[in-house]
Image 1: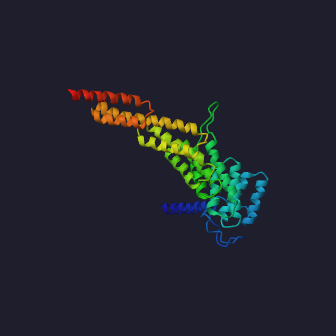
Image 2: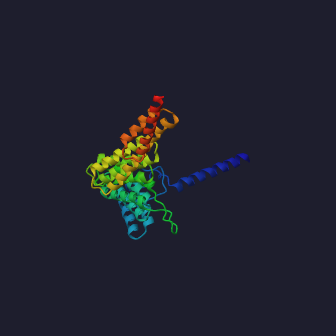
Image 3: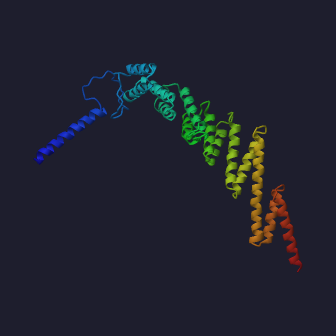
Amino acid sequence: MCVDMLKVNATFKVVLLASAFMILGFPEPAGASRVYEEDDDARRPFFTFLRPAESDPESQLAYSDELRENNRPRGAMRQYRALVRHWPNSREAPRAQYKYARLLEERGRESRAFDEYQTLIDDYAGQFPYSDVLERQLRIAKGHLEERRGRIFFFRGFTSPERAIPKLENIIDNAPQWGRAPEAQYLLGKAYEMTRDYLLAAHAYETLQIRYPRSEFVEEAAFGRARVLYQIAREHRNYDQASETAIIALNMFLRNHPGSEHRDTAREYVETLTEQRARIAFNKADYYDRIAKRPRAAIMAYEMLVERFPRSDWTEHAQSRIDALQSKMEGSSEK
């Protein structure tokens, strides 16, 4: 009885397995008729849920186009994908891939469309309208910088620049010499700045100035780099090197772009950071003065502050401490 039950179970499992193979659409058995016999199996997946409606890629593309023209976008998308999956090396495959990506974009699935355009660039170089695809990728990436998500009543929502970063990097890698590559590089710096990743933003802005020195975005990139270095210095107010680096970048911007609309803001940044550096210098001198009790070292530090920052608000305090310490030291010498 047990042996019979085991045989029944084994037979049942075989039937289930055979059914699964049929449902999942494994390759057709040997001897099945096929019309298209070029080398189209090189990249075909082991199995797929997508089955083409026609027996050759040319007819499949025509059928997919017909679905699209008859306002059946979902069916057209499915059949375009089936063509690419079953005949990846055919002449029709890049055309189907491009039309599939276009439908995704038209239906608002822009991130997915960007990835499908990238598939075109990676797998079908020279077989599609290259500039058009790059334009569409850039438009999608810019949309991520500008769009606001999660809007509720009076709440305007929030932007998602982090979604744009990998897309902009892809565009720059795809076509570093493309006419709009400088714009993509600038937007990459802007995206990093919006996510408060200031070091990467500074690097992106600097890369634009080095790689595309004649670009119309050079001035904005120069000020962008100085601006993010200013932000770093303000976030690390006791780190004098950060302030000095930012001041150098700001002065360089003012020297190279004296007529810029950002010149007044740049000068304000320089004044703020100069005052910040003066405060750091005063704190150092004050440490020698009041905590370490080293009047000679304190006088030297105060004098250095007066020399380096003659117009600072801290200069008067430093000079008064110099006078007081010198008077005290003279009095001690007389005694």
